[in-house]
Amino acid sequence: MPTILLWLDEAETYRRAAEAAGLASRCTLVAVPRAGTPDAALLEQADAVLAWGAPAGLLDRMPKLRWVQALTAGVEMWLGRPDVTDRFALCCARGTHRVAMPENILGALFHITKPYTHAALAQREHKWVRKVGQPLAGKTLGIIGLGAIGAEVAKKAAALELRVIGTKRRAEPVAHVDKVVPPERTAEILAESDFVLLLLPATPSTENSADAAFLAQMKPGAWLLNFGRGALVVDADLIAAVNRKQIAGAVLDVFRQEPLPPEHPFWATENIQVLPHIGGMHPTRDAIVAELFVENLGRFLDGRPLAAKVDLAAGY
Ligand code: GLV
Image 1 (cartoon, rainbow, N blue to C red):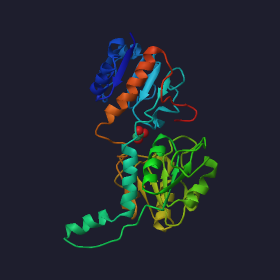
Image 2 (image 1 turned 180 degrees about the vertical axis):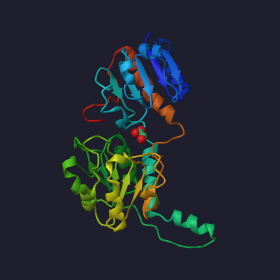
Image 3 (image 1 turned 180 degrees about the horizontal axis):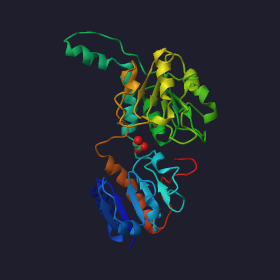
Image 4 (image 1 turned 90 degrees about the horizontal axis):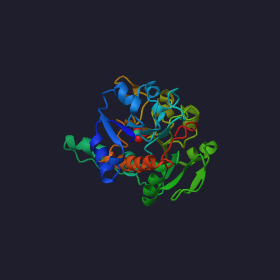
């Protein structure tokens, strides 16, 4: 019977989901806490692992490994390592951010355009200060990296009467998106967008893509939202563009180093809103990821192709 290592703290949720799907009797599920390390015997024996990450080299000690199920949509922590090869399938958590991410991104758009923070601060002083919010309707949202999350954002943003445009590697039509262009035409999206939303994965070809030249192509007064990965943005270039009011500001949920170090200038830059990587958090996130885990566990046990498999060359 295959051994599946559940290397995370919430293993019970995944075990129960496997039981409910009638799959637990077809494999041995072994739980190890996230902060622990599986012992040598378990590493030798495991056919698959569900984990947030693994120290470099550890997977080389798993000779039977055929499937790694990551818990995140972005998998840069697994990539570019000699122990991650196509001898096993690496699957990401693509599709599990259907609700929380789009809602948090819409939250960022409302934060930018509506005066709630202002009202909350004025309330502390018992002050009645009326400030007019800006409408979202009629504005353009440009999504750089229209994947599974971008498609959901587009659906919800379109319902708010935003015009949605964006880039996608395979530039095929996406529902609720007015214009989809390949990455080579990103400048066109930047020039038209009031809000530019970065949803790209961190790969060698996307790293540092939001640099001074990219920011200079944005509409004056536009906002940058980064819910992809911190490595997409050249921090100093963004701070310079915001300080000289070339763009209005930024809402950042992801950073090169997390937690963001207290001395980082993002904290103190006016019109840069720092969010502590909350985009994908959800009270029942594990139950949602468990649906994908169970789907893939069934496929794995039947020898069928796995879902959300990462293309190691593309990086997502
Ligand atoms: C969260 O950042 C994820 O990639 O799922």
